Image 1 (tube, rainbow, N blue to C red):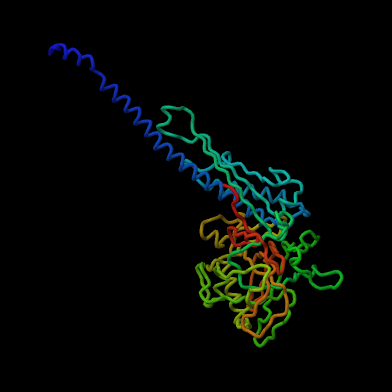
Image 2 (tube, rainbow, N blue to C red; image 1 turned 90 degrees about the horizontal axis):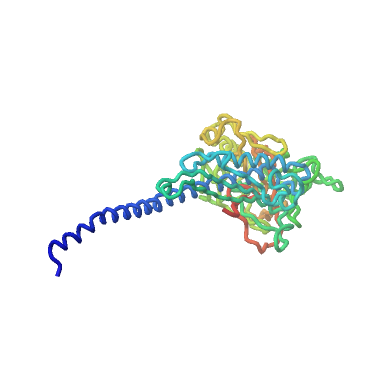
Length: 444
């Protein structure tokens, strides 16, 4: 039996154990803090890096489309290298607008490449696949990302890496690269309500045999006509006039090159509008994004024969001018008809006024860029007020102006076609933006 004196001596031998337990507990608490705080910090940084990479890749792919890469599948005009330089610059610029780990992304944090180009760094050479669906890859990496509590256990900084690849797809030539050798359909958004016939109004584009206008797209293969000719369709200035744009006029049926028909716009079909909104559904469909769907290759798009004459001309002029000025009476963006094509933001323009860009900046998005459906140009059945026509493709236009007669001046930025009367087994590609050549993220 222990005496009281022996028990006291035993307890004196345990002095300091509590301090050891507290020290061990503090180490555990610090480790848990490092795990909680630093992992959250790294997770947020990873999300920021991925956001920067995604945005940069999408901007670069849109720059490839705007530069006309998909309109020149064989690089006949040697524009790929310049277009890729612009795309890389655009991607880098967009990436540097994002923050990562509390600081803006720098040029040294970004790497841009073109995975399916002849040369992945500058796109020199020729490769048909790249000319049909060019890809751009952006890697955002920061190696000196600061951590806090974890520095107690490791002195090295953490590295965050994010990769994004974006692709542009022109369905006009997609059959040559698709798995089943069929045209890949697209579903462009925000299509403007002008149905133009499949006839190029440029006087230089006529058949040598028949002296008749050449089509925009080949309805057998869906390919762009005059894509590789000396006087190609991409970049050309076109003048589009209403098929029936004056009071008491008679419909030219079938239409000639350069005429357009108003597409039927159901009431309440708009889901987005700029500052100024037109007084009619048709004018709103010009100024806004209409959710009317156009199926390429089959009969279904409807013509609005009730909207014509001075009414149509007024709607078109007001709609176009309000659209390209952002409804604020600003200066429309400028298209440099160079090779590759470039869109420049202007002082007082919509993007500059909103503070998104500065005057003189090159941009890939503009209110002046629109998509319109191309129909086969067959005779219209006028027995009903909304006869149907067959859409065989889409044209991406850069709007310059519209006058009081409803005459539209525009440049052709791109054309995409489909095979008339066929239903593709492939699901339609729905890309970001309002382009006849959709752009999408394929990996991230």
